[in-house]
Image 1: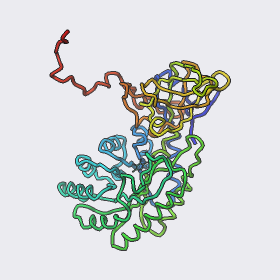
Image 2: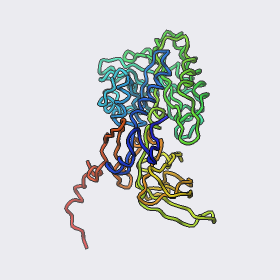
Image 3: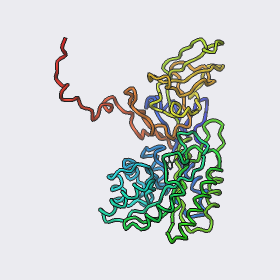
Image 4: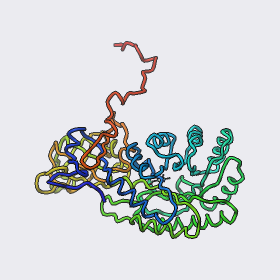
Length: 430
Ligand SMILES: *Cc1c(COP(=O)(O)O)cnc(C)c1O
C-alpha cells in the first residue's frame, strides 16, 4: 500500500502533484510520502501488538533524518551499523534505549560512542569482537549489553548479494559454535549477555526461511536459558520483502504470527529490524528525460529505444548492482502506444541503467518519470560517481511538501579535498 496515485491525469504523492515538486526542486529528486511511512510502521507494529516488542528501524535502508524521526515519533527505535548512523539516529530523536548496533566491523571509537550513549545492545558477530567490546567497556568501567548474531545457515532464497544467513556468508557466528562463545561471554566482567540475534537476508518473499531460522534460534535460546543465561531480548533482524514487480511477500501479520509462534512460552522482548518493508514503497525517484535515441534493434527486428534520464546509477544503484526491477511510471500524459526501451543515465558505464528492455509509453525528452519503490536503498546507497552532486530529498504530508535534504552543490563535491603541496604553484613546462 502506498500514497502514489494518478489523479486528474497526473501522478500525485498524497495531495501533491509530482510535477510541482520537480518544478520547484529540480530533478533528480527523491520524494517520500509521510502517510505511507506512518502507515507501514503502524501495520508492522500492530502485527506484534500481542507481545512485548521493540521496532528498531534499520536505518541503512534510508538514513534521512525526517524518515527516522517519523518512526521515532511513533515510538520506534533504530538498528544501526556504524558510528555515523548512531549520530544521525540520535540527532533525529531516536532514544538510545531503543538503539541496537549490528555489523561485522565495529571500530573502537564506534564501540566507545555506543557505550557512552547507553544503547540497548550490541549484536556481536565474532569472538574477537566480543574481546574488543569487553576490553573497551572495561576501560570505560561499563558493562556492555550483548547479543551474539547467530548464523542459522538458512537459505533466504533472495539475491546472493543480500543473503546473509548462510554458512558461507561473512555474517554472524555459526549456530553450532554459538554456545561456546556465549559461555565465554557470560564469564566476562564487562559483558552482560542479554539476548540472541539473527538476520538472514533482505527482500525475502517467502515465510519459510524466517520460520526455519526462528525455529533454530528457539532451540539455542532454550539451551542458553538451561545454562542459566538471562536471555531477555530476541532479535530476529529484518528482511521482509516488498512488491517491486510481481512478488507477493508475506503480510506483516503473517510474518508476525510465524515469529511469535516460534517463541511462545518465553518471557522475552522481541526486537524487529525492518528496513525495506517500512520505506521501500514510500519513496519514488523523480527524473526528467534529457534525450531519446532510437537505434536498429540488436535482435535484427524493429527498433531499440534509449531514454536518457537525468538520474543514474549513482542516484539509484539497485538496478546496476542487483539487476533489480523498479517500475517506471509517467508523471503526466504521454503519447499513445508502446515501445521497448532501456532507461539509462548519463554515467559513462554500460551498467548505468534504471530499466532494461522495458515496455514503456513513447516518452519524449523533457518528460518526467517516476522510478517507483525507490524509498529503500535508494538515496542511502547513492554516490558522487562521475562527480554528480547527490539528489535532493523531499517529504510530502497531505498537500504540503518540504525539502528534507538539499541537492548537493558542485562545491560540496570538492569539500575536504586539497591540492598536494608539491603540485601547487608549479608552472607547466612546455
Ligand atoms: C540490512 C539489515 C536489516 C534490514 O534489512 P531489510 O531487508 O531492509 O529489512 C536488518 N538487520 C540487519 C543486521 C541488517 O544488516
